[in-house]
Each structure stands twice: as C-alpha cells, then as structure tokens.
Length: 413
Image 1 (cartoon, one colour):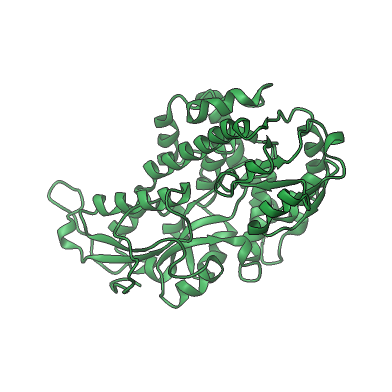
Image 2: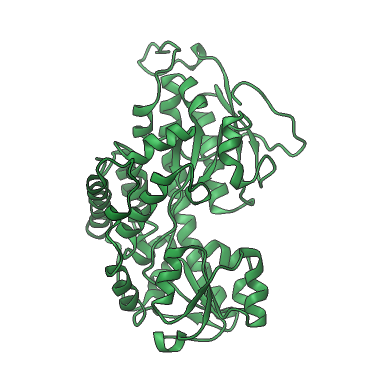
C-alpha cells in the first residue's frame, strides 16, 4: 500500500528489480502530480512527495528471481534520490503466489509476482497469449531462450496487446517478465533416443510439457514439486521436467543425474507486476524511473540464468550422470509441435484479432532471434550442447549490446 509502512518482524529493507514497460505507461491513467523539472532539464526529485511501495516476493534468498527484484528496488531508490523506497516482504511472508491478485486488490501489496497459469478464470486472454508465445519460442533452445527469448518477452508487453488490457482490468500492470528455458529433463537412468525413453514415467507441470515429452514415448504424470524427489528415489517416476533452478534447489540430480535440455517451450506468463491503483497514482517522473531501472537488473537475471545451466552441467557429472545431447530427441519434439492446432483457433472470444496478435508475437521473436544470431553471434543448434553450457553467460560476448537493444525497444510493435 503506497505511503503506509506495514509492520512485520521479518521485513527486509529496501532492495531492487525491473521496471515498467513503456507500453504499460501508455495504458495507464495520467498521474496528477505536476512535472518536477530541475534547472538542467533533469528531474528535481526534491519537488516530489516521497513514495513507499510494498513489495512481496515468494522466492528464496539468492534465487535469480530474488536478485532481479532486489536489484530493481535498489536501482529505483538510487535513481530517484531516495524519493521512492520499498517495504519488502520476501519468501512468501506476506501472501502465497495463488493470492497475488487479491493481495493487490486489497492493497496488501503494491508490487508482486504473478504467474498467469494460477489464474485461468481471471486471465483467459493472458493464458492463451502464453500459448502463442510458447509457439513462437519453442525451438529457440539453449542458450537462446535466455537471450533472444527474454528480449522477446520484454517487447511483447510493450506496445499494443490484448493481454495488457485484460491485465489492467484484473488490477495490475506488468513490470518485468521472467522467462527461462528450456526446462531440464532429468532421468534416473541414461538415455539418448526416444527408444531409450519409451515407457518411462515423467513428471510434468503442464499440458504442453506433457505433450512434448509423451511424443518421446513417455507417460506424463502431474506430480507436485515437493513429491518428485521421493518419486524418483522410489522409482514411482523415472524422469522429471523442471526449471534449471528447481533441479538444483531440489537436489534432483541426486536421484536423476542424467540431464538433457531439449528444444521445448519455455515457461511464460510470469511477471513482476504493480497494482493499477499504485501505478496510476505515481507521478510521470516516477513511472519513468520504474521503467528505466529495469535494464541492469535484467542483464544480471539473464547472466544468472545461464550460470545456473552451467552449474547443472558440472553437478550432473559429480552426481554420477552427465549431460545428454538432445540431437536424437529434438526432431521428434519438433514434429509434435508441427501437429499442434493453430493458436488462432484457441483464442477466447474477447480477442478481436487473434491472427494480428500472433503475427505481432512472431515478428518480435524473429527480430530478437536474428539480433542474437547475427549481431551478438550467439551459436545456436550446436552439435555439442556442452560447449554452450560450459561457456555460461560467456555465450554472449557483448552484453552491453543486448542491454542497449532492450533500452532502444528492439522489435517493439
């Protein structure tokens, strides 16, 4: 709640993460505070009233998502010369992830994490939009999902999009997307081909992951995250599909040390957001500061994500397994995707032009893919994926060029 400091014994002081996308500002109501322009043309922050935003996070200390939000908070406070500060509640101390929307509507929090998949009834357009994005990015693979894919998601939430209208009506505006991929397929026993995987039980988290992995001959099982370690240990399931960070934090390599990163769809529809009430109440200068503070935090997020994949590579070998090249698996998954229904046929009735939404998404994805390959010289579809994994964030030689592309709105439509 703006301007109100909540009392909680575990409150952590101001710290930092990403910023509102330019397109979000275009959809927000005009702030009432007069412009505060200094003598040199910059912002005279002394003319603006102090603002405190409540930030709630479900993530653990040190996680890439935690670093992202904390970096952004620090950057905002510094950029506004202390005018904007934060009342920060980490590790789910304020509310669970499934109560993010009600937490904002009740003014319990101003900034929080929203995963569209938790709210299918409130966000039908956004959940459909996630499928469109997954179609666009499903063959980016490693490492480019975490380079071009992140860039695509940032621009996706700028400009015009049916999902932005729905999000505003649901009570929030997206601040910064969190995307990573591909997911890690870990198995208790070694594998190289669909024949090796045939008949195995694989833990999956959603229908798309189920389809991708069942195309390889496995049977998808929706096992809760906190039950999969024991399931793998006891042989109830033979493999599991998870985000790279989950593999490490859950100790899954101890019971499934054979790992492959296929060209599968990334997670999508995950954003740090701000409530519409909080956003609309902010002066234009502060809205701009929130947007502009995101870039360095996002660069670190991308680097941290790639470093996590690098860590898995070494940890898998230490656990007695290793990295499996997906060369024999990717063509099968690609065929599965080719058979999927056109997303336009799945669009909710409230989407006036599904074809236009899909065209825009694909165009942004193509622009970022070309930039990654042609300008950043990221090597994709390598015969030996271990070279990219070993390089970590070094797969990009000039991160400043990537960050500048975000600032300049590469691919924005």
